[in-house]
Length: 129
Image 1 (cartoon, rainbow, N blue to C red):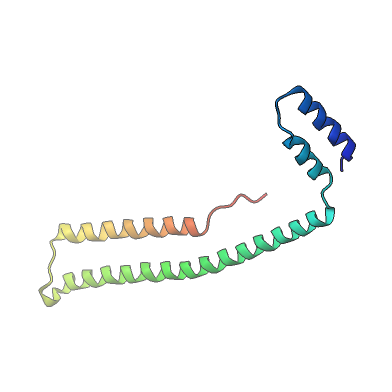
Image 2 (image 1 turned 90 degrees about the vertical axis):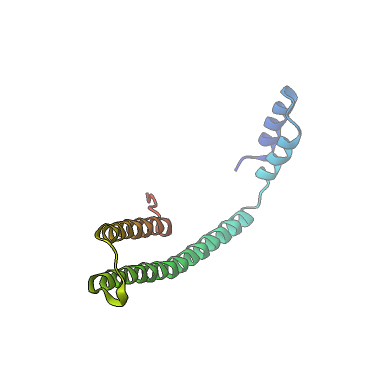
C-alpha cells in the first residue's frame, strides 16, 4: 500500500503543473487511507451479490426452458392436428398440396429458429478461462 506522503507529493506535482483540480489530491488520499477491512467487506458483499444473481438466473432459466418446451410442443401438436384434419378430410377441412407443404415448411423453420434464438438467449455461451 503506498504511503500517504508519496501519494500527496505526486498529487502536488500533478496539481502544480497542470489545470487538474484538487480532486486528484482528494481521491489519492482516499485511496491511500482506505481501510483494508472495509475493502474485504466490500469484496464479500460483491461475491454474495454475484452468487445471488447466479442463483436467480438459474431459476429463471429453468422456468423459461419449461415454458419454451411446452410452447413448442403445443405448436407442433396444433400443426400435426391440422395435417391430420387435411389428411382425413375431417369436418370438410381441406387445403391444397401447396398450402400444406408451405404450412409444414414454414412451421418447421419458425419453430426451429424460435427455439434456437430463445435457447441461445437463456443459455449464453460464456468464455470460461
